[in-house]
Image 1 (tube, rainbow, N blue to C red):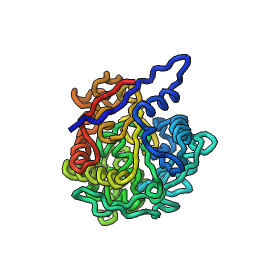
Image 2 (image 1 turned 90 degrees about the vertical axis):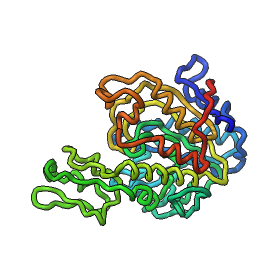
Image 3 (image 1 turned 60 degrees about the vertical axis):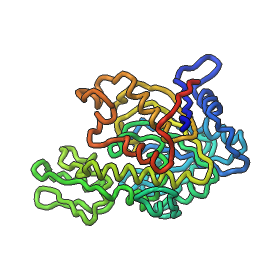
Image 4 (image 1 turned 90 degrees about the horizontal axis):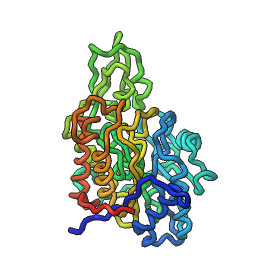
Length: 367
């Protein structure tokens, strides 16, 4: 099988070309002009950043992509779906407030911002992936499915549940409605070490499902209510809440996410961009971001989201590790496995290849 081409440019600039112009040149070199954008609604799927997080992509990048799409005759809009957990993006009003606060508003981005699954995260379209083992009907935000063309604009980073947050995660988990996110997460639930718990209630504050409550001087989990989203794990200041997902459950999450990504882009044109900068160990859904674990590397573009993820991970693993980060004291080898040793990011890649989402074999074409 022919290797997928992944086009790469570093972040070096010249006096005659800035980084945004270089990104547009990279996209053209990767073949974005092969897509017929004429009068086509074009969803630019990205992450607007949870309030308090500073690792998300700057809106300037979104403007560069939107301007290029518009110059090719398209009608671009920026989009994302509401979150499952409590935070700044759980409904469309809060989501737009958060997006605007982080600089994603029409005057800055050159296009409208639309929350794909509506006011309460219930505006969805059921889509049957053409291949897969876990998802019968993916629940995708309606605005994403109403688009004629999909472009994923991804901040590549680590991820606490998937190992990496790349194009596959951006498309699959990111385009799922709230019910879709629940479906993808539902195979794993945390457990509580009551000997460590101090009953502070931080976990209860971030639980969207009322699954945590005080019992004496400790907290307790109602597992019939728990959705397995894992936000309480990150909120606990004592480490009393731990993922109970074994490797198989994490693998199922990865596989479901890949099948959701396939549902999003099958049967219509798509193009994918990943920016490997501010490579934080966790998702931009966190209301904070830890220090970057590797230096800023560059920009990737192409038609294969799986190949982009593989290339981005390989470039990160070939880069030197930065000091005073989450990798301090971590074992040698894959940086993302070292940061999140219970996750295996290649599970999503392997399943994505199996279902025909893309290829793990790629040729890196340097701009």
